[in-house]
Image (tube, rainbow, N blue to C red; front, side, top):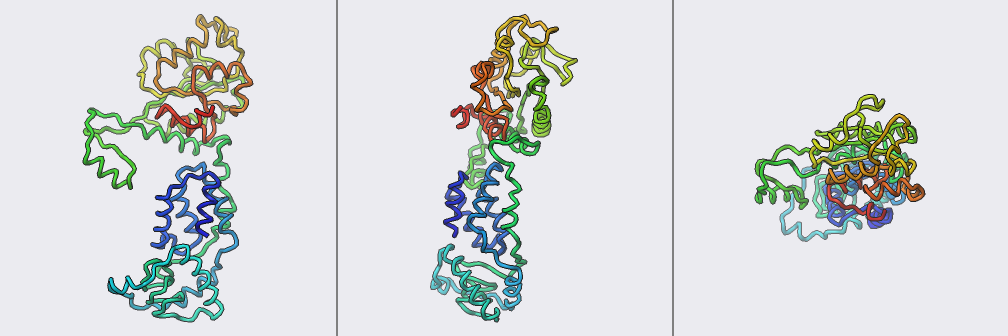
Length: 400
């Protein structure tokens, strides 16, 4: 059964390492799921699933594996009632070594068999045995006994709830790779920026502290620096408003909300279709600042994120006075300003609310993509774009 669960998860594209799979088995041996299928649902998800975009796939794999095997509350209550508390069994090391250590899959498979047998006989007390669900014995199932691989039952609160119903609800089905994001999902992806290397006074690596922290993290490297200061992600957000972006106004607003909540050093500006010699300080575009002055005075180490559909007439990018607003005159073509922004910031990306399948159908989008790495404004796209800002590379952009 558990092998099927593993392959069901893998077949749905959920990345699971053997280290995580072994960790799950250790959690089961310690009865961290408290003999509850519902608790197992949550324990397994917390150990095996590292990104919310896989929650819905996890639910589908869980349903496929465990649907129809849930134990009723009545059966469990009778089991608990039959477990008479006795003195805890203490065996010597020699006696412990004489006990066969079963594989966890075999233990759980046999558990269902024992459960059915005891159900037929009415769950009479079993004390000191080595087969049935009982107390003070060598059986893999029960309480106050000992077995090198078993399932503890009755030593704590234990209730089979409705894990299958939880999975069937598929609460996380909107955590998909190609759906519009809500504010919370954006915050999850934007929070990756907080993993940037810390701002620090010196470049001296504390080797011993780094080794200690890495060991505490079970092998996941964490660098420790002398005189380390608080982490500080610096982000500037340019947002296209009006015109063809009006249908995405709420989406852009959510991105702004997520970024402002997650980032300690955050600036934002607005533009319409293309950035020219002015960038706007509000969505009404009635207060602006000089783009040249901003670029001249801004720190180069800001992560720049531009949000827009990039749908416009090519002339808006290539012509002097090509701006769509008839009262606005640009002495320098938009593509020049775009390139200046690209040259100013080491790390800059473009987020597009339009699906990537239509990007090549629009000339202006193709032109913008020649200047900026472009990502979809979806959960996967935002997550990958943040990784790109941090590392300069990602699988998703390589495909595009």
